[in-house]
Amino acid sequence: MSKHAKSQSTFAFENASSNVAASQMRNALNSLVDSSNSSQDISDETKLRFENEMDSFFALFRRYLNDKASSSKTIDWDLISSPSQNEVVPYSTLNDDSSNKNFDKLAVLKLNGGLGTSMGCVGPKSVIEVREGQSFLDLSVRQIEFLNKTFDTDVPLLLMNSFNTDKDTELIVKKYQSHRIRIKTFNQSRYPRIFKDNLLPVPKSIDDKLDAWYPPGHGDLFESLVSSGVLDSLLQEGKEILFVSNGDNLGATVDSKILNHMIETGSEYIMELTDKTRADVKGGTLINYNGEIRLLEIAQVPKDHVEEFKSIKKFTNFNTNNLWINLRAIKRLVESNSLQLEIIPNQKSITVGNSDMSVIQLETAVGAAIRYFNNAHGVVVPRSRFLPVKTCSDLLLVKSDLFNLQHGTLVMNNLRFGGAPLIKLGSDFKKVSNFQQRIPHMPKIIELDHLTVTGNVFFGKGIQLKGTVIIVCSDGQKIDIPNGSILENVVITGNLQILEH
Image (cartoon, rainbow, N blue to C red; front, side):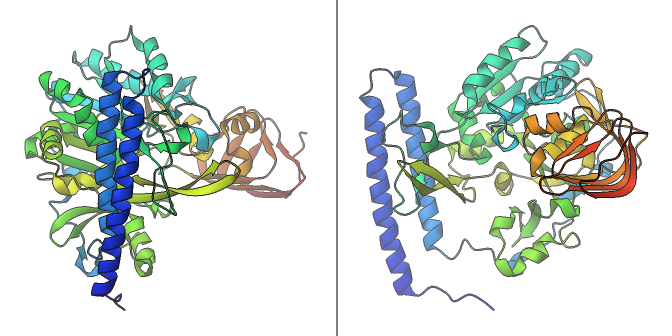
């Protein structure tokens, strides 16, 4: 059934409400700017940046209000079709010329705004140790340093920080000064959270507490690249292509085949997709929408079509957020104010005084920009290029014997048959410190298909896991898996402890 169209009186009411909300927001933002201008402790450069950020935020807020009042932003499911053969191409069809001829045109950017709080860590997520004492950032530096040495080139590494990760990252990158790699950092915007009930900003002054502000998602990349001056300096160096990926995706390495393909085809934007499994049903996917290529995210899908969206038959691949983007195109689109990315309202809760208050942060995603670039398309890449570490279950995978480390790149062990196993660790393993305490020595999982562990479970040394292994410890009990155990196709429940003989 189609939804009822809004009546003229409804539109009139919502437009009037939007105008009032916009006017109140503008006044509140002006007060914030005044608070920065009257401060003696803030540089003129910081004041100007802050004023520009508040203007950009206001433009985003106005669009949010307009979207809320308009029904035209709703996805019409009947206009969706599968992308054409030109819009999504298999990696295997790319020209096999994997030469290094275009490396001098390349810069690499890691999205480095996230904290490790979801894994119980303090500070930037990129400094969590993932393999042989090395962090996400260490591995990225090793990869690009090896590339620069091997091909006698100068690919710089850029880190887009948030105000949450900026200071820590600045200290950390100093240790790479003697390496053959140039590292540039810049900050994405700092926007005010808004109260859900009255749509007014949480902060009252520029130096208000940190939880009054938020980084507005990685869609902010384009504007921040330009406003920071980083984009112009890259163009002056002769750089043409930016390879962007999440800082926690260990599979996102420089690939000369995709780089060369992009330059040969004159594409301004390439999104790496990979085949969807049942673990990836919420990932965004490329569609053809009314004749143009678009990224469809689950949040945009009408409720009665969500199960269809999750189907791995209809939508066979998903966005890895490994993106190749033309720098001149970014400059053109930002300066012409053409990038109107879909707004994702993200609801959070903060403590104000003794009360918990609902707040909204308005975010955008970098993948949504694909529709604005010329000859943009997707490339379906091997699963090995998507190796994110979002949880300690992922951490077990990348620390294990399933992968070998070569010049900062994780390479699947050639003894492994098929893809990676499915690993599900319970809440007792959520924090990295708990994970390390319970699994101090990585088990061998080369022959593992599926592992589920919940409850108070501890692993000894030299353990092998094969086939399907399920370990469920009862509340108030403890399971110790002793040194040298070989568990193959077993279910362990209750408080059963395997005894050494």
